[in-house]
Image (cartoon, chains in turn green, cyan):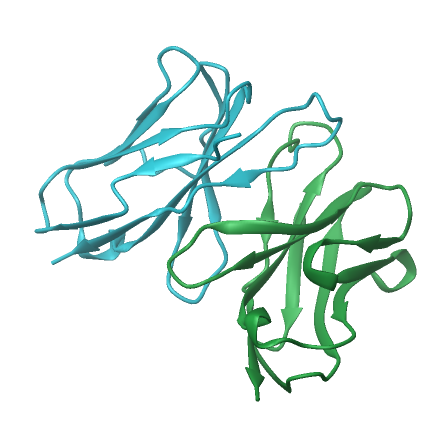
Length: 116
Length: 115
């Protein structure tokens, strides 16, 4: 079984401030981990993914995330927020193999608001 | 390269009416997924296809929902009859294992409103 918990359904930052979106996962096997972003009335766009290579993963739009096995976390960060980062962000987990291969389990999402 | 295409983007129907959604995946992607996204929540998998075969439909409410992917390319998801609680966004995604992972690429979704 696998699950994802995103801490904080809403995060608000000022433009230029650090963005930190928290994600903790549970998985019985080594996981693949993903962050997706969803803009209003659009589908999900992949920001970055962890697939058991480097633990610090860099994605698009200046985002990065660090896989910490001991903390079962995969938090998303960006050093300096931009107005265009305002959106909803989803953390997701899938298994590397087995019968659950291909099944993405998503967190509840975190809405990021960026103030001028 | 074209992304995942879905139609219609929006659909409004009366309860008890049938409705169908269409999805065309990224060319060459043999795996296709249908997800349900309720307001304020993350997507939940309804069904996963490997080519023409539905390999995981455990979360599909089979009394009213059906899906098909006859030629292993595009797919249709149907609801008959629709209920008020079916109002949601229906997302289609596709992936390929050629890259070694199952990174899923999503379409824009179909927003269903049942009145």
